[in-house]
Amino acid sequence: MPKKVTWLELFFDLLFVGAIASVTHVLLYIEDGVVDASVFWKFVLMFVPLWWAWTGQTLFINRYGNDLLPQRLLIGLEIMFVLLMISSFNIHFDETYITFFIGYIGLRMITAIQYLFAAKKEKAARRNVALFLGKYFWIGIFISSISLFLDGEWRYIMLYAGIVLDILVPLIGRKGLRQVPIHTEHLLERFGLFTIILLGESIVAIISVLSTEVMDAGLIFYAACAIVLVLLIWWQYFDNLEKKLDKEQQTAGQLIIYGHLFLFLSLSTTAAGIKMLVLPDISYHFVVFFLFSSVLVYVLAFSGTFHLYRVPEERLAWIHLALFISLIVALFVLVWFVVLSPALVLLVLCLFFLIFGMMTSK
Image 1 (spheres, rainbow, N blue to C red):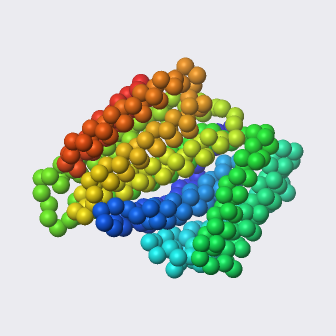
Image 2: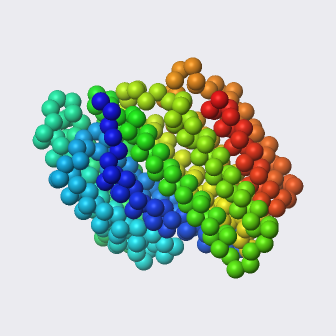
């Protein structure tokens, strides 16, 4: 039976607009013309729990959601924890760690409780899966909670040890989860909606470029190229999502779930790259490497995430992936050795996504 995305789910997603903006903004702290490795890893370490907190609730609703009053009340409580987590995302993450911890752990605890409540009402395989997830998610929560009693690096090692274990629980229980398959169409729609949030961050970056005090034709041309790039990414992703995938497949959905982590990361770094490219103190070669690396991650993640969900006659061969990678590398070498204006760099990326989109959605 088809599963409809509810209005409450859409409202829940709306909160993550601010979270994505806060996390992506961390990448704009430039020192000596580059983003320091420690800043980049801080971005990743904030992004992963953000993605997992959203994914955890999305998957519960996908399998067990009913949009009744108890579920609405719990999601309402989750919204408060989301706001706490969002408020903690900044370059001085160490100083807001407690706020982040309360927000993240609160979200994960509610998700685990929801599974245990669902287990009481379900039978057979559905009950076993709900009980499995509801019980074993608490292990990751417990391990992450130990971080409150630690300082320095060990605090984060313990926090992310728990998060990693939490992320691995569905993989460990894959055999059981396949007996309670996801609603593929609903899950694709949910991840598609989150993709729009990520693309929206690129639009925000374009607006910030246009909001500078000194406006000239070059800046307007750059913004136009950036908009074309975002539209091409949107077209490539959603044309495939809508027309090329078999939404009736009965799977555990783990390719969609884990593949989208890298898709989302690449879209977030692309949004930051659009802003970086016109910063006066940025290294040209750094930002070129940053943007083309983001595109490469996107291509690899897109290919791996959707390959088995494409209808058999629409699946691409390894030669296609090799061609995409070769084209990215060739364009990167061109832009690396021939220093172009920021707008022309974006036009080169537009050319790639035009070819990529035509070959994947034809």
